[in-house]
Length: 375
Image 1: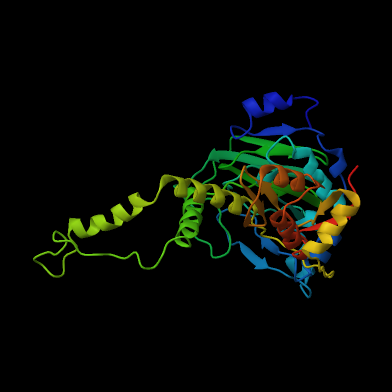
Image 2 (image 1 turned 180 degrees about the vertical axis):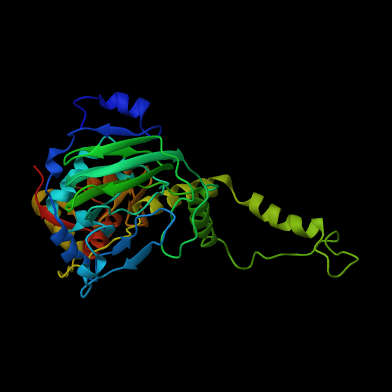
């Protein structure tokens, strides 16, 4: 990836600032998956997929949600449609291995790999994303038009099933061949169109929780800590001459209740909210295996080997802070040492009873599995 541009230069001059085309950056991605394989995945109930059809930015666009076990692809015609499949890294080890190329960025921000297949003219129209994305050409060729910087005030067309920009101001255009990769920073308008009949593009996105999501989650966490008996009480000043009026003294009760919460509670709730949001698993495949493990089993294994090797499930999302471990949107109070070891796949004795309990929960939820003894 960084044979023609240093990692430092990319992070300093391009990351979250401007697009960059990596030419022949990931030859490992060439021909990893084709349209037939994506169509097969789109038939499964446990896979999120959709088909978008259209070509004229101001014309009629339609979006069909999967699964598509009986969908007639011939009815779509030979041009101007796209099949999109989310979370393909959960179903293919080689695709999942591509994520290792992005280890220079926070792993907890990585989303999934979305794959699209399109004949000539296929695309999802001019749009923008709030998150950063790397677009990797896997098969065929695709043209990408790059446009203006967008935000919440940008005009969007009125469509029931798809969000298209009302206006697209092209500023650059690039053609991509297999192995090429285009970085698009969050908010930048882009519009991809297939130039061949076998176009497969992989999309690696990075999560960017909004302040609205962050604060809503934090307030939800705080609300679980509050007690019901703390309720509004009248004061002499809140008793107004007009029985229908909420006067300033009454309204200030809400402000006082907000201010009376200790700052450390707010800090802890916001920290936990961020961890929950970035590890929440949106595309979870089903597992046919059943796991039953208890604390005594973990303790016996540790007594025998002194260490455990763990492997995360394809759909597992793990992260940690100084005081908490996050796994698929759930927060556990845990030491930084334990959490770091678990996230990196190696646990060493001794483990506390609480750490064993957390490990058992993750094993039984099939987010991780035991594979052997650490060296």
